[in-house]
Image 1: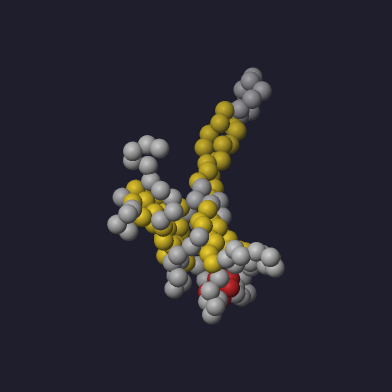
Image 2: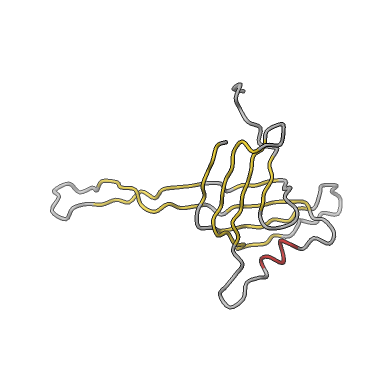
Length: 143
C-alpha cells in the first residue's frame, strides 16, 4: 500500500436524515459519453469522437435497520403527482481525527428505489436496507 493511501471504511453521509452512518456507499461515478460525428462530405466512412453529455451513476446507500427509524422509507414516499423531495447530499471520507479529506457533493438527489432486508432464518448478519438515489451532478473535492 502506498504511504499516502486512504482507507475507505471511515465516512459519513449528510443526506438530510438523522443517522449519518452507513455500512456502504457506492455509485460515485462520472462518465462522459463519446459521440461519433462525421461530416457528410467526408470520404472516410468513420467519424471522429467528441465529448458528449456527462452521465452520473445512481448512488447506493446501505445501512443497518434500527427500530423506529423509517427515514429511508419516508423519503421515497414523498413522491406525489410527479414531484418528490430532492436533497443535496454530502459524502465525506474521514481521516483518523474524523476530519474530511475527500468530499463528494451530490446535487438534487432523490430516491428511485428502496430495498428492504433479505431475511434468513439461520443467519446472524445485521438486517440492511438500501436506498438508491438518482441525481443531477457530482462534484469531488480533495481537502
